[in-house]
Length: 191
Image (cartoon, rainbow, N blue to C red; front, side, top):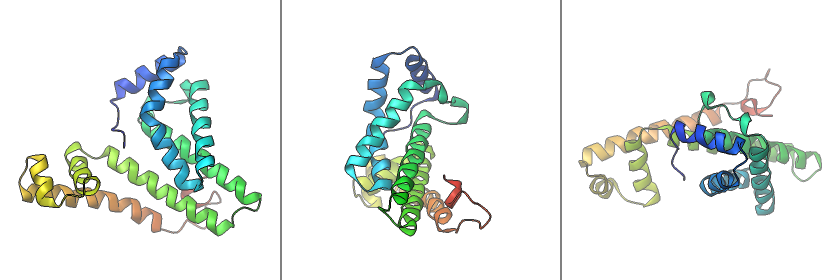
C-alpha cells in the first residue's frame, strides 16, 4: 500500500499533469497503479477488466488533471474514488448484459465499498497506528514483536493495535447497514 503523499506533492503533481508532463503521469502510475488495479479487480473479479479499468483511469487523469480538487481530499483518495466509481459502473454494465445477477453485482459493490473505506481509514490514521497495523498484519508479527519493531512498550503496541482495529471496524459497520429504502442510487449512494 502506497503511503499517502503530502498535500503539497498532490498539488505539484496536478500542476505537472496540467502542463502535460509525461514523466508526471509515469510517476503517478508507478505510485498508484497497484492501488487502482487491486480496487478494480476487487470489484470486477477479473484481471482483464481490472487492466482495462487501470488504463482508463490513468487516461482520464491524463486528460482531466483539473478534475482533482485538493480541497476535497488527497490525490490518492480521489484516484481510489475514481477507480471505484468506474469499476462499479462497468460492473453494472456487465449486469445489464446478463453476465451477473443484480444480487451478485450489489454484493460485489458492497464489498468494494468496504474495501475502499478500509483503505481510506488506514491511510488517514495517524502514522503510529498505521505502522503498528502494518507490522502486525503484513509482517504477521504478534504485539510483542511489533512493540520491538516500533521501539515501544508492549502495552503501547497493544494500545495502538486496538485503536487501529477500532478505526478499521467502522468500515465494516457502515457496510453492514442496509441501504435506505428511499435512496434510489443503490448501496451507499454509489451509482
